[in-house]
Image 1 (cartoon, rainbow, N blue to C red):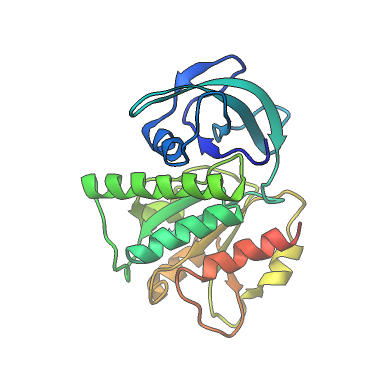
Image 2 (cartoon, rainbow, N blue to C red):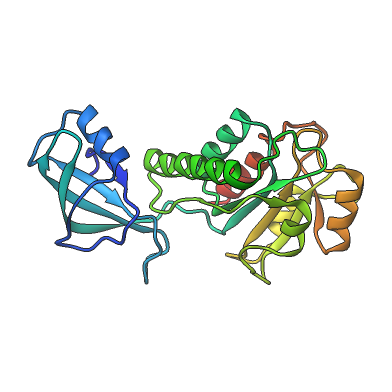
Length: 254
């Protein structure tokens, strides 16, 4: 299974299933010039009982059409390439291609979820149908990141919301998760100390601003709502770099 191409399918997988791959995966198989009888690895990105990561499924190509690829699912193999704790990112969205890059790299580094927020200093302000299209685009980037890095789970992109909605109404309520916002305040806790203080497996929810950071009013509101200031050191990092530093530090914990 290790050398076979790997594709995500948005449907539960079971041994013996026969179906056509979604269009994107089918195009990938055709570009690789694979033939009936050759094998793929498929994953559905879902949680499975007793599996901390997920499952990769071996599948055989049964038929190649002009624009369709039919496969049969065979056996499953456990895959666990997740972080030692769930990490969700509440992000003041950086603009355009920077947000694309951030979603891709966060997915590769193991982020559980991304909550795109519109902040006072946000350059990117998408709403309505445009927001829905961007969300679908970002989710596709997250899927491709998991295909590439070998994760059996996919970082979940939540709908775009205002800063205040994201601050006070988490999309996934986890009372045990530690909540930190990136800050230059003198009392901010250093990243190594913050991670060392977490219980094994405890979740982490990180709030990070857009270009220019959170406004003083937004930071004060977050602190009043119970978020703790977190320092990444004296350097001023870009909006798309700072959250990745936290993910990399969590990954380095093993």
